[in-house]
Image (cartoon, rainbow, N blue to C red):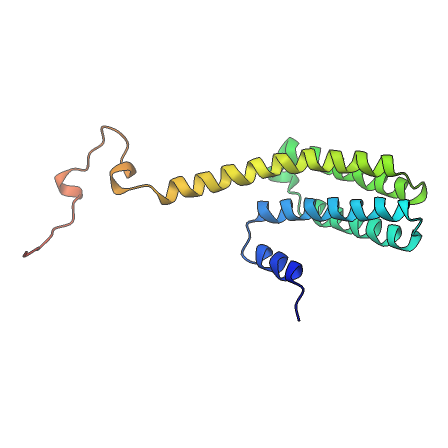
Length: 156
């Protein structure tokens, strides 16, 4: 039997936009770090190691598709953020600190919020484009001319 949580996540990922996938990866990072913090509290070194290693892997998935040619300063800033994040994850791995993990979670949630805003703007733009009617296709004052109309042979 499929785990309902897993089934929901798989459904969320299939057909998702690239921005939605980024948001989901941020959520995975936060989940990994919360579990790592819990493992620190329980002195579970194996679980802490697995969760932080997984978080480092997720950072790689976020960082690898950065397009520096077209992304400009945003791509460079994200690259720097991911490099610092990875360094801090390694630091927390070798010097376990719940405070350090909670600071990383706070940083991730702040950046995730920015991605959610991008996702909402993307959805809004798609909705507006889909709602465009033929009357809004022409700019104001640019009515179609008689010669632009297709001949109709309608017999009602």
